[in-house]
Length: 175
Image 1 (cartoon, rainbow, N blue to C red):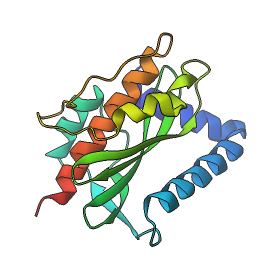
Image 2 (cartoon, rainbow, N blue to C red):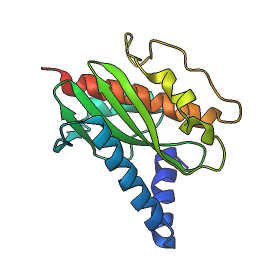
Image 3 (cartoon, helix red, strand yellow):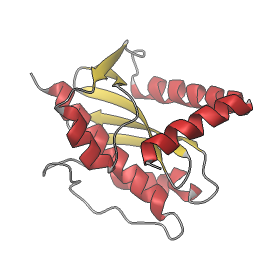
């Protein structure tokens, strides 16, 4: 089963089982808090980046699978963009908020962590490594990110999302 299909089925099964209400509310609350902290003058209107036939192969190269949606929502105020993205850790999606300013990550925050292992990636000691990261080479961070023993797949997921957010930021910032 492909990762994108597993991601879709995980979300659908959570909805059908009725246990997702708390997680969905928690994710929305965390997203709103992240956006309020990111934009001091108020949360700008969200925008939509449609995943065109030109973008899809590049995104697939970053994630190692197709993105499971047709568009990605983001928030922009000048050269600052905020992205709320999901990626599968081992079995379940990890929701991450990434703030990009002038082509560099200003903040990376795990908003909702659903896995039973690898939860250490939520902590500042780990996410601080991403601050200031850029994409000097196509689809590659300008620094190494130290892993966490027992959290390899979660670390990998956050690295992919960091690269994706920087790539998407470059895409929407082009004149």
